[in-house]
Length: 68
Image (cartoon, rainbow, N blue to C red; front, side, top):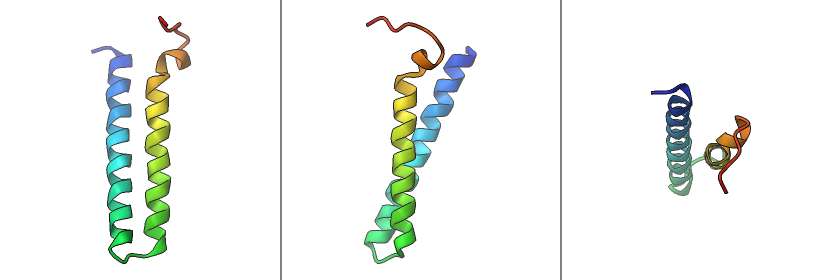
């Protein structure tokens, strides 16, 4: 496995963690939790979206031209 492929796996793991944690915190907030849980859910949701964007544009970050 190349280093780039391993990096993609780590980014995907981060997306799954951040998205799952976000959903869990928002669910806890909706069940009557503290406002901090909503804030954490929003922050980790944004982090997951940022990681998705990074993964989709990884070739550009690495200086590779995309084929499209």
